[in-house]
Length: 317
Image (tube, rainbow, N blue to C red; front, top):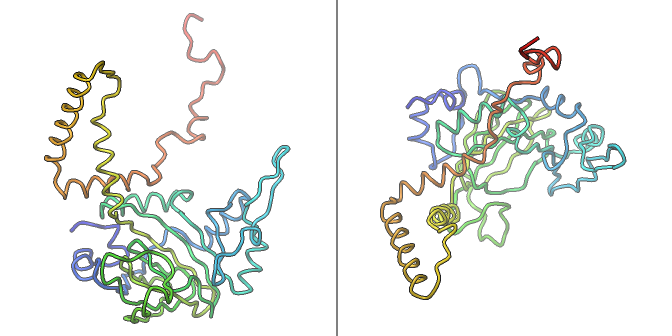
């Protein structure tokens, strides 16, 4: 399998997909270390702009902290919008043991957006990126399950992970694992990641992590898989294409004829749709939600080619 982007984290993509994918967690130490498109320096740059705000930034300390604890308002013209990340408050909360979480890094960080577009093309699935910063000795999120496969790339410090069994059937939910979910799933892997190490967490496998040494930072590449609801939505989107847009049949006979025609076209289209086709269509709809690479020229390029005067390029003078 030719998957050079995936290989940057797992080494041999064919072996990874055969041995680990959807089956069991694994730790990888590729030559040169697992690549991260986002670092603590990029975090500094994001916070220093003054524009960074929730919901792209969150802080956790066992539970999600109220935004007012780590954000501030800004005066813009005559309004005072809230929710802007406050570096001073964030640092104070980190010093107190809280975890910093940056959401959807691919939506606002160009190198990460480009990297994830390549990985999504190789795996045929939607991919998102999240960045976590956790102090030593502190746990970020509680034991939980993700509705996605995750590649964890350790960027700084070290972090100890506890991986537990995955769901036993399709009747499970993403989120915190509590006593109401039945017996605590058995732990199947404990590992400490250091810079350059990569951990694969299969979809639905319960896990938690604790900062080990230094300030731990890792990038989570979240590979989304479709569910039953996505498949149903895809079917409905196909059926919606068959709906007449402007016909207004008059009378019972005309309406029955239109109904019969619509049912016939729908049945024909569904009969030609295979389960594999439906699954790929649903996955494609997920990939379509990923942020596109801007196709327009940069403003620097625009300025370089902009006419020198309003009359530049005109004829007859």
